[in-house]
Length: 457
Image (tube, helix red, strand yellow):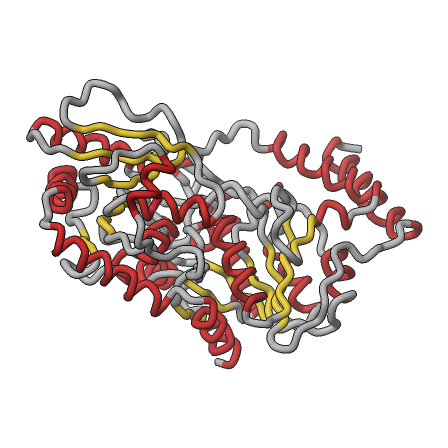
Protein backbone atom coordinates (compact mmCIF):
# COMPACT_ATOMS: atom_id res chain seq x y z
CA UNK A 1 0.00 0.00 0.00
CA UNK A 2 1.43 3.39 -0.96
CA UNK A 3 2.03 6.07 1.65
CA UNK A 4 -0.73 8.29 0.23
CA UNK A 5 -3.35 5.51 0.25
CA UNK A 6 -2.30 4.48 3.76
CA UNK A 7 -2.70 7.97 5.22
CA UNK A 8 -6.02 8.56 3.42
CA UNK A 9 -7.32 5.25 4.81
CA UNK A 10 -6.32 6.25 8.35
CA UNK A 11 -8.04 9.63 8.02
CA UNK A 12 -11.21 7.98 6.71
CA UNK A 13 -11.28 5.53 9.63
CA UNK A 14 -10.69 8.35 12.14
CA UNK A 15 -13.73 10.21 10.86
CA UNK A 16 -16.00 7.15 10.84
CA UNK A 17 -14.95 5.89 14.28
CA UNK A 18 -15.34 9.35 15.76
CA UNK A 19 -18.94 9.62 14.56
CA UNK A 20 -19.79 6.39 16.43
CA UNK A 21 -19.00 7.59 19.93
CA UNK A 22 -18.21 11.31 20.01
CA UNK A 23 -21.12 13.27 21.41
CA UNK A 24 -21.70 16.67 19.88
CA UNK A 25 -22.24 19.42 22.42
CA UNK A 26 -23.56 22.94 21.83
CA UNK A 27 -20.73 25.43 22.28
CA UNK A 28 -21.51 29.10 22.59
CA UNK A 29 -25.29 28.76 22.26
CA UNK A 30 -26.72 31.98 20.86
CA UNK A 31 -30.14 33.45 21.57
CA UNK A 32 -32.40 33.54 18.54
CA UNK A 33 -33.25 36.80 16.79
CA UNK A 34 -35.73 37.85 14.22
CA UNK A 35 -34.24 38.88 10.91
CA UNK A 36 -31.55 37.27 8.80
CA UNK A 37 -29.68 34.17 9.92
CA UNK A 38 -26.09 34.51 8.73
CA UNK A 39 -23.26 32.02 9.27
CA UNK A 40 -19.74 33.37 8.76
CA UNK A 41 -16.66 31.34 7.86
CA UNK A 42 -13.31 33.01 8.58
CA UNK A 43 -9.91 31.54 9.37
CA UNK A 44 -9.42 33.92 12.31
CA UNK A 45 -10.99 36.75 14.30
CA UNK A 46 -7.83 38.85 14.76
CA UNK A 47 -4.45 39.39 13.17
CA UNK A 48 -5.07 41.48 10.08
CA UNK A 49 -7.43 43.67 8.13
CA UNK A 50 -9.45 40.73 6.81
CA UNK A 51 -10.11 39.42 10.32
CA UNK A 52 -10.93 42.90 11.64
CA UNK A 53 -13.36 43.43 8.77
CA UNK A 54 -15.07 40.12 9.46
CA UNK A 55 -15.55 41.05 13.13
CA UNK A 56 -16.92 44.49 12.20
CA UNK A 57 -19.43 42.91 9.83
CA UNK A 58 -20.48 40.31 12.39
CA UNK A 59 -20.93 42.91 15.13
CA UNK A 60 -22.86 45.24 12.84
CA UNK A 61 -25.34 42.50 11.96
CA UNK A 62 -25.80 41.60 15.64
CA UNK A 63 -26.33 45.27 16.48
CA UNK A 64 -29.09 45.43 13.88
CA UNK A 65 -30.90 42.49 15.47
CA UNK A 66 -29.88 39.72 13.08
CA UNK A 67 -28.79 36.19 14.04
CA UNK A 68 -25.12 36.24 13.12
CA UNK A 69 -22.66 33.48 14.10
CA UNK A 70 -18.98 33.29 13.23
CA UNK A 71 -16.89 30.11 12.93
CA UNK A 72 -13.08 30.37 13.05
CA UNK A 73 -10.12 28.04 13.61
CA UNK A 74 -7.90 30.71 15.16
CA UNK A 75 -9.86 32.42 17.92
CA UNK A 76 -7.83 35.09 19.69
CA UNK A 77 -10.58 37.39 20.94
CA UNK A 78 -12.95 36.79 23.83
CA UNK A 79 -14.84 40.08 23.52
CA UNK A 80 -16.87 39.17 20.43
CA UNK A 81 -20.25 37.49 21.04
CA UNK A 82 -21.48 34.53 18.99
CA UNK A 83 -17.95 33.58 17.91
CA UNK A 84 -17.28 29.84 17.74
CA UNK A 85 -13.86 28.21 17.85
CA UNK A 86 -14.47 25.44 15.32
CA UNK A 87 -11.62 23.38 16.73
CA UNK A 88 -13.70 22.79 19.86
CA UNK A 89 -16.41 21.21 17.73
CA UNK A 90 -14.10 18.36 16.74
CA UNK A 91 -13.99 15.13 18.68
CA UNK A 92 -10.57 13.73 19.65
CA UNK A 93 -10.23 11.48 16.60
CA UNK A 94 -11.56 14.14 14.25
CA UNK A 95 -9.07 16.64 15.62
CA UNK A 96 -6.22 14.17 15.13
CA UNK A 97 -7.35 13.39 11.58
CA UNK A 98 -7.69 17.10 10.78
CA UNK A 99 -4.21 17.82 12.10
CA UNK A 100 -2.60 14.93 10.24
CA UNK A 101 -4.33 16.01 7.05
CA UNK A 102 -2.90 19.51 7.36
CA UNK A 103 0.61 18.17 7.99
CA UNK A 104 0.37 15.85 5.00
CA UNK A 105 -0.82 18.67 2.75
CA UNK A 106 2.09 20.87 3.84
CA UNK A 107 4.59 18.09 3.20
CA UNK A 108 3.25 17.57 -0.30
CA UNK A 109 3.91 21.18 -1.28
CA UNK A 110 7.26 21.76 0.44
CA UNK A 111 8.88 22.32 -2.95
CA UNK A 112 6.58 25.30 -3.53
CA UNK A 113 7.66 28.52 -1.87
CA UNK A 114 5.03 31.17 -2.57
CA UNK A 115 5.78 34.83 -1.99
CA UNK A 116 3.31 36.42 0.42
CA UNK A 117 -0.03 34.85 1.28
CA UNK A 118 -1.14 31.88 -0.78
CA UNK A 119 -4.02 29.44 -0.21
CA UNK A 120 -3.59 25.76 -0.94
CA UNK A 121 -7.00 24.08 -0.87
CA UNK A 122 -5.44 20.80 0.28
CA UNK A 123 -4.60 22.47 3.62
CA UNK A 124 -8.19 23.64 4.06
CA UNK A 125 -9.39 20.25 5.24
CA UNK A 126 -11.79 21.15 8.07
CA UNK A 127 -14.89 18.93 7.71
CA UNK A 128 -18.38 20.29 7.12
CA UNK A 129 -20.29 18.08 9.58
CA UNK A 130 -19.24 19.69 12.89
CA UNK A 131 -20.26 23.16 11.68
CA UNK A 132 -23.54 21.84 10.26
CA UNK A 133 -24.40 20.02 13.50
CA UNK A 134 -23.59 23.04 15.65
CA UNK A 135 -25.46 25.45 13.38
CA UNK A 136 -28.56 23.27 13.59
CA UNK A 137 -28.62 23.72 17.36
CA UNK A 138 -29.35 27.37 16.53
CA UNK A 139 -31.64 27.02 13.51
CA UNK A 140 -32.51 24.35 10.94
CA UNK A 141 -32.66 26.85 8.09
CA UNK A 142 -30.17 29.66 7.51
CA UNK A 143 -30.33 32.51 5.04
CA UNK A 144 -26.70 33.02 4.18
CA UNK A 145 -23.23 31.48 4.50
CA UNK A 146 -20.84 34.42 4.19
CA UNK A 147 -17.27 33.35 3.36
CA UNK A 148 -14.51 35.74 4.43
CA UNK A 149 -10.77 34.88 4.43
CA UNK A 150 -11.08 31.11 4.70
CA UNK A 151 -7.70 29.86 3.46
CA UNK A 152 -6.41 26.82 5.39
CA UNK A 153 -9.89 26.44 6.93
CA UNK A 154 -12.56 25.27 4.48
CA UNK A 155 -12.33 24.43 0.80
CA UNK A 156 -15.07 25.14 -1.79
CA UNK A 157 -16.50 21.62 -1.54
CA UNK A 158 -16.95 22.04 2.22
CA UNK A 159 -18.59 25.43 1.79
CA UNK A 160 -21.02 23.90 -0.69
CA UNK A 161 -21.85 21.07 1.73
CA UNK A 162 -22.54 23.53 4.57
CA UNK A 163 -24.69 25.79 2.43
CA UNK A 164 -26.78 22.96 0.98
CA UNK A 165 -27.28 21.26 4.37
CA UNK A 166 -28.53 24.49 5.96
CA UNK A 167 -30.61 25.60 2.98
CA UNK A 168 -28.58 28.80 2.75
CA UNK A 169 -27.28 30.86 -0.11
CA UNK A 170 -23.53 31.38 -0.25
CA UNK A 171 -21.78 34.73 -0.67
CA UNK A 172 -18.08 35.49 -0.99
CA UNK A 173 -16.82 38.63 0.72
CA UNK A 174 -14.15 39.99 -1.63
CA UNK A 175 -11.84 41.02 1.21
CA UNK A 176 -8.73 40.77 -0.98
CA UNK A 177 -8.05 38.85 -4.20
CA UNK A 178 -8.13 35.36 -2.66
CA UNK A 179 -11.59 34.51 -4.03
CA UNK A 180 -10.72 35.95 -7.45
CA UNK A 181 -7.57 33.91 -8.11
CA UNK A 182 -6.22 30.39 -8.05
CA UNK A 183 -4.60 30.95 -4.65
CA UNK A 184 -2.80 34.27 -4.17
CA UNK A 185 -4.22 37.09 -2.04
CA UNK A 186 -2.60 39.84 -4.13
CA UNK A 187 -1.81 39.41 -7.80
CA UNK A 188 1.11 41.90 -7.63
CA UNK A 189 0.43 42.94 -11.20
CA UNK A 190 -0.09 39.44 -12.62
CA UNK A 191 -3.18 39.25 -14.86
CA UNK A 192 -3.45 35.47 -15.09
CA UNK A 193 -6.35 35.52 -12.63
CA UNK A 194 -8.39 36.83 -15.56
CA UNK A 195 -7.80 33.69 -17.64
CA UNK A 196 -7.72 30.90 -15.06
CA UNK A 197 -4.16 31.13 -13.70
CA UNK A 198 -1.53 28.45 -14.41
CA UNK A 199 2.26 28.80 -14.69
CA UNK A 200 1.98 30.88 -11.52
CA UNK A 201 4.91 33.29 -11.08
CA UNK A 202 4.47 33.33 -7.29
CA UNK A 203 5.01 29.57 -7.24
CA UNK A 204 7.89 29.75 -9.69
CA UNK A 205 5.87 27.43 -11.94
CA UNK A 206 6.01 26.99 -15.71
CA UNK A 207 3.25 24.37 -15.77
CA UNK A 208 0.01 25.76 -17.29
CA UNK A 209 -1.89 23.09 -15.32
CA UNK A 210 -0.26 23.73 -11.94
CA UNK A 211 -2.07 23.96 -8.61
CA UNK A 212 -3.17 27.55 -9.27
CA UNK A 213 -4.96 26.48 -12.48
CA UNK A 214 -6.49 23.42 -10.83
CA UNK A 215 -7.80 25.46 -7.91
CA UNK A 216 -9.12 28.22 -10.17
CA UNK A 217 -11.03 25.71 -12.30
CA UNK A 218 -12.51 23.91 -9.29
CA UNK A 219 -13.55 27.13 -7.57
CA UNK A 220 -15.14 28.46 -10.76
CA UNK A 221 -17.17 25.30 -11.27
CA UNK A 222 -18.40 25.04 -7.67
CA UNK A 223 -19.29 28.72 -7.33
CA UNK A 224 -21.36 28.59 -10.52
CA UNK A 225 -23.09 25.35 -9.50
CA UNK A 226 -23.97 26.89 -6.14
CA UNK A 227 -25.25 30.18 -7.54
CA UNK A 228 -22.82 32.06 -5.33
CA UNK A 229 -22.91 35.86 -5.29
CA UNK A 230 -20.07 38.24 -4.51
CA UNK A 231 -20.08 41.13 -2.03
CA UNK A 232 -17.30 43.66 -2.64
CA UNK A 233 -16.32 46.45 -0.22
CA UNK A 234 -15.27 48.86 -2.97
CA UNK A 235 -15.73 49.60 -6.64
CA UNK A 236 -12.08 48.73 -7.18
CA UNK A 237 -12.46 45.22 -5.73
CA UNK A 238 -15.74 44.79 -7.64
CA UNK A 239 -13.93 45.46 -10.92
CA UNK A 240 -11.37 42.79 -10.04
CA UNK A 241 -14.19 40.33 -9.36
CA UNK A 242 -15.79 41.10 -12.73
CA UNK A 243 -12.46 40.57 -14.51
CA UNK A 244 -11.75 37.33 -12.65
CA UNK A 245 -11.98 33.90 -14.27
CA UNK A 246 -13.40 32.45 -11.03
CA UNK A 247 -15.90 35.21 -10.18
CA UNK A 248 -16.74 36.84 -13.51
CA UNK A 249 -20.40 36.40 -14.37
CA UNK A 250 -21.55 35.89 -10.77
CA UNK A 251 -24.05 38.28 -9.21
CA UNK A 252 -22.20 41.15 -7.57
CA UNK A 253 -23.08 43.89 -5.11
CA UNK A 254 -20.80 46.61 -3.73
CA UNK A 255 -20.91 48.28 -0.30
CA UNK A 256 -18.25 49.02 2.34
CA UNK A 257 -17.41 47.36 5.64
CA UNK A 258 -19.43 48.98 8.46
CA UNK A 259 -17.77 50.85 11.32
CA UNK A 260 -18.71 51.58 14.91
CA UNK A 261 -19.50 55.26 14.36
CA UNK A 262 -20.26 55.77 18.04
CA UNK A 263 -16.57 55.07 18.74
CA UNK A 264 -14.86 56.20 15.54
CA UNK A 265 -15.80 59.86 15.45
CA UNK A 266 -14.17 63.31 15.55
CA UNK A 267 -13.07 64.92 18.81
CA UNK A 268 -13.47 68.48 19.99
CA UNK A 269 -10.35 68.22 22.19
CA UNK A 270 -7.44 67.20 19.99
CA UNK A 271 -4.91 68.73 22.39
CA UNK A 272 -5.85 66.33 25.21
CA UNK A 273 -5.58 63.32 22.90
CA UNK A 274 -2.13 64.42 21.75
CA UNK A 275 -0.97 64.78 25.34
CA UNK A 276 -2.32 61.34 26.18
CA UNK A 277 -0.33 59.79 23.32
CA UNK A 278 2.83 61.81 23.93
CA UNK A 279 2.58 63.71 20.64
CA UNK A 280 3.57 67.35 20.04
CA UNK A 281 0.88 69.83 21.05
CA UNK A 282 1.62 72.15 18.14
CA UNK A 283 2.20 71.60 14.44
CA UNK A 284 0.78 69.34 11.78
CA UNK A 285 0.71 65.60 12.37
CA UNK A 286 0.16 62.95 9.72
CA UNK A 287 -0.86 59.44 10.71
CA UNK A 288 0.35 56.37 8.84
CA UNK A 289 0.48 52.64 9.46
CA UNK A 290 3.96 51.10 9.32
CA UNK A 291 4.56 47.73 7.69
CA UNK A 292 7.65 46.02 6.39
CA UNK A 293 8.55 47.86 3.15
CA UNK A 294 9.27 44.43 1.65
CA UNK A 295 5.49 43.97 1.46
CA UNK A 296 5.56 46.20 -1.58
CA UNK A 297 1.84 46.51 -2.30
CA UNK A 298 1.25 48.03 1.15
CA UNK A 299 3.35 50.99 -0.03
CA UNK A 300 5.16 51.93 3.18
CA UNK A 301 8.43 52.07 1.27
CA UNK A 302 6.86 54.65 -1.06
CA UNK A 303 5.78 56.70 1.95
CA UNK A 304 9.34 56.69 3.30
CA UNK A 305 10.65 57.89 -0.06
CA UNK A 306 8.08 60.70 -0.01
CA UNK A 307 9.21 61.69 3.49
CA UNK A 308 12.82 61.95 2.31
CA UNK A 309 11.73 64.29 -0.48
CA UNK A 310 9.80 66.46 1.96
CA UNK A 311 12.71 66.55 4.35
CA UNK A 312 15.03 67.66 1.53
CA UNK A 313 12.51 70.41 0.73
CA UNK A 314 12.59 71.65 4.32
CA UNK A 315 8.98 70.72 5.09
CA UNK A 316 8.22 70.55 8.81
CA UNK A 317 5.93 67.67 9.74
CA UNK A 318 5.46 65.18 12.58
CA UNK A 319 4.64 61.59 11.67
CA UNK A 320 2.56 59.50 14.08
CA UNK A 321 3.22 55.85 13.26
CA UNK A 322 0.95 53.02 14.30
CA UNK A 323 1.58 49.35 13.62
CA UNK A 324 4.98 47.73 13.36
CA UNK A 325 7.95 49.45 15.01
CA UNK A 326 11.45 49.96 13.68
CA UNK A 327 10.78 50.81 10.04
CA UNK A 328 11.23 54.61 10.26
CA UNK A 329 14.91 55.38 9.66
CA UNK A 330 16.90 58.03 11.49
CA UNK A 331 18.59 60.98 9.81
CA UNK A 332 15.69 63.33 9.05
CA UNK A 333 16.39 67.02 9.68
CA UNK A 334 12.89 68.50 9.47
CA UNK A 335 10.66 65.44 9.78
CA UNK A 336 10.07 64.09 13.29
CA UNK A 337 8.15 61.01 14.30
CA UNK A 338 6.60 59.05 17.16
CA UNK A 339 6.09 55.30 16.99
CA UNK A 340 2.84 54.53 18.78
CA UNK A 341 3.01 50.79 18.08
CA UNK A 342 0.00 48.55 17.45
CA UNK A 343 -3.35 50.10 18.38
CA UNK A 344 -5.87 47.42 19.25
CA UNK A 345 -9.57 48.10 19.31
CA UNK A 346 -11.66 51.00 18.05
CA UNK A 347 -11.08 53.17 21.13
CA UNK A 348 -7.30 53.11 20.68
CA UNK A 349 -7.56 53.59 16.93
CA UNK A 350 -9.93 56.52 17.36
CA UNK A 351 -7.45 58.33 19.63
CA UNK A 352 -4.67 57.88 17.07
CA UNK A 353 -6.80 59.30 14.26
CA UNK A 354 -8.08 62.15 16.42
CA UNK A 355 -4.57 63.18 17.41
CA UNK A 356 -3.51 63.55 13.77
CA UNK A 357 -4.58 66.14 11.19
CA UNK A 358 -4.75 63.85 8.16
CA UNK A 359 -4.10 60.23 7.21
CA UNK A 360 -1.98 58.68 4.44
CA UNK A 361 -2.68 55.25 2.96
CA UNK A 362 0.16 54.48 0.51
CA UNK A 363 -1.13 51.04 -0.58
CA UNK A 364 -0.96 50.26 -4.27
CA UNK A 365 -3.00 47.04 -4.43
CA UNK A 366 -5.71 46.02 -1.94
CA UNK A 367 -9.46 46.14 -1.46
CA UNK A 368 -9.36 48.53 1.50
CA UNK A 369 -7.71 49.39 3.62
CA UNK A 370 -10.26 49.68 6.40
CA UNK A 371 -8.14 52.40 7.94
CA UNK A 372 -9.19 54.71 5.11
CA UNK A 373 -12.79 54.65 6.26
CA UNK A 374 -11.83 54.71 9.94
CA UNK A 375 -9.73 57.83 9.46
CA UNK A 376 -12.49 59.66 7.59
CA UNK A 377 -15.08 58.65 10.19
CA UNK A 378 -12.83 60.40 12.73
CA UNK A 379 -12.78 63.49 10.55
CA UNK A 380 -9.35 63.01 9.02
CA UNK A 381 -8.92 63.68 5.29
CA UNK A 382 -7.45 60.81 3.33
CA UNK A 383 -4.45 60.86 1.00
CA UNK A 384 -4.30 57.67 -1.07
CA UNK A 385 -3.68 56.23 -4.48
CA UNK A 386 -6.93 55.51 -6.39
CA UNK A 387 -7.16 51.84 -5.35
CA UNK A 388 -9.36 49.89 -2.94
CA UNK A 389 -12.04 51.86 -1.19
CA UNK A 390 -10.33 55.26 -1.60
CA UNK A 391 -12.10 56.24 -4.88
CA UNK A 392 -15.45 55.42 -3.26
CA UNK A 393 -14.75 57.70 -0.29
CA UNK A 394 -12.74 60.63 -1.61
CA UNK A 395 -14.27 63.65 -3.26
CA UNK A 396 -11.15 65.16 -4.73
CA UNK A 397 -10.11 68.32 -2.92
CA UNK A 398 -13.09 68.24 -0.56
CA UNK A 399 -12.50 65.44 1.96
CA UNK A 400 -9.19 64.05 0.74
CA UNK A 401 -6.84 63.63 -2.20
CA UNK A 402 -6.34 60.81 -4.68
CA UNK A 403 -2.75 60.62 -5.87
CA UNK A 404 -1.98 59.58 -9.43
CA UNK A 405 -0.42 57.69 -11.01
CA UNK A 406 -0.40 54.76 -8.61
CA UNK A 407 3.02 54.38 -7.01
CA UNK A 408 4.26 57.85 -7.94
CA UNK A 409 6.44 59.09 -5.05
CA UNK A 410 6.71 62.71 -6.20
CA UNK A 411 2.92 63.06 -6.45
CA UNK A 412 2.51 61.49 -3.00
CA UNK A 413 5.03 63.91 -1.51
CA UNK A 414 3.25 66.86 -3.13
CA UNK A 415 -0.09 65.81 -1.65
CA UNK A 416 1.38 65.39 1.84
CA UNK A 417 3.06 68.80 1.62
CA UNK A 418 -0.24 70.38 0.60
CA UNK A 419 -1.87 69.21 3.83
CA UNK A 420 1.19 69.96 5.94
CA UNK A 421 1.05 73.60 4.83
CA UNK A 422 -2.70 74.03 4.30
CA UNK A 423 -4.35 77.01 6.05
CA UNK A 424 -6.11 75.95 9.26
CA UNK A 425 -9.56 76.98 8.06
CA UNK A 426 -9.33 74.96 4.86
CA UNK A 427 -8.04 71.92 6.74
CA UNK A 428 -10.93 72.16 9.23
CA UNK A 429 -13.43 72.24 6.36
CA UNK A 430 -11.94 69.12 4.82
CA UNK A 431 -11.96 67.36 8.17
CA UNK A 432 -15.67 68.07 8.59
CA UNK A 433 -16.38 66.92 5.05
CA UNK A 434 -14.51 63.67 5.71
CA UNK A 435 -16.62 62.90 8.79
CA UNK A 436 -19.87 63.78 7.00
CA UNK A 437 -19.20 61.61 3.95
CA UNK A 438 -18.03 58.60 5.94
CA UNK A 439 -21.08 58.64 8.17
CA UNK A 440 -23.45 58.22 5.23
CA UNK A 441 -22.20 54.84 4.00
CA UNK A 442 -20.28 53.24 6.88
CA UNK A 443 -23.11 52.65 9.35
CA UNK A 444 -24.27 49.21 10.55
CA UNK A 445 -27.81 49.92 9.39
CA UNK A 446 -26.72 50.67 5.84
CA UNK A 447 -24.66 47.48 5.69
CA UNK A 448 -27.50 45.26 6.93
CA UNK A 449 -29.89 46.83 4.43
CA UNK A 450 -27.49 46.05 1.58
CA UNK A 451 -27.09 42.42 2.63
CA UNK A 452 -30.86 42.00 2.78
CA UNK A 453 -31.21 43.56 -0.65
CA UNK A 454 -28.58 41.19 -2.04
CA UNK A 455 -30.46 38.18 -0.64
CA UNK A 456 -33.68 39.36 -2.25
CA UNK A 457 -32.20 39.63 -5.75
